Image 1 (cartoon, rainbow, N blue to C red):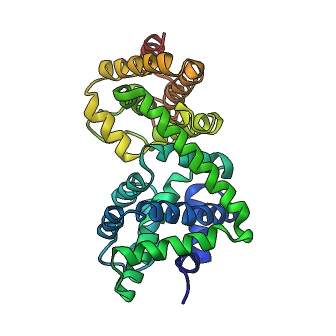
Image 2 (image 1 turned 90 degrees about the vertical axis):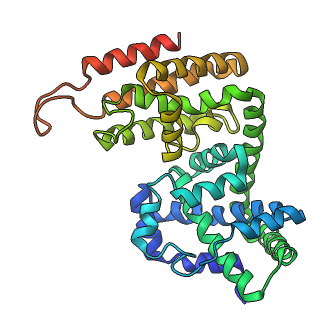
Length: 334
């Protein structure tokens, strides 16, 4: 019988890989590398979770009851791709947080830096897909919590000790190490971490011409801010505060969190000021890089689309309102 790793690999056919490459702006080779790393990374975390009776029972409850369809429940290629751009989908986000804990962004950032594209959406797709395959096995073999733990441990050990997977495991182990280090950094910030993690989205919203409670006027602003954020994450040291805060990129969950925290632009800039103060106190060596990243996100948002004009003709690249917002961000970080 095929292993879970083999089932996962065979389920993702060339059509899916090609579509993922186009959606994430990279080539199929990078997508295959990302998927190859995602499987042992996820399985390893599941195996660790299942190593205790209570963890195994919790993992069983996390498994989807309906595991049919493409990749354990996505249904079709269109819905699969759409999940990549909805914050990895609510299911994927919840699973990743449960499996990787506070070091999630740093894990994603480590893989993103190594592979050259934003890996977080891919992880968000792979988690429920693999869960679906595990659910099928649990149902077919009538596994209880203990049996599931044994299967995960055995298959994970077989994969990780295979010399053929040495390059993949190097990526996985580096990502795990970054996540562990980031979790320690996050713990050292205490309650202040909420502001630090929210600062990138706060910079986007402070400059964006959109209403804080409504949709963005243009996705160009979001894409520009995302690109600036990921550039910052790629240059951040593994396991650093910047990696822990920025490595996951912009997500719907992060956007909702900041909207709940800040209801107007003044509160957004206060949030950025509080985040800057926290980094200055806890990670002074990263302060300049933090400011540069927030500054670049604001600037990219402001320059993403012309304000005014008609059908893209005329208008101003950076409006007076956006210049004012950028100045307030700068003052908040002083």
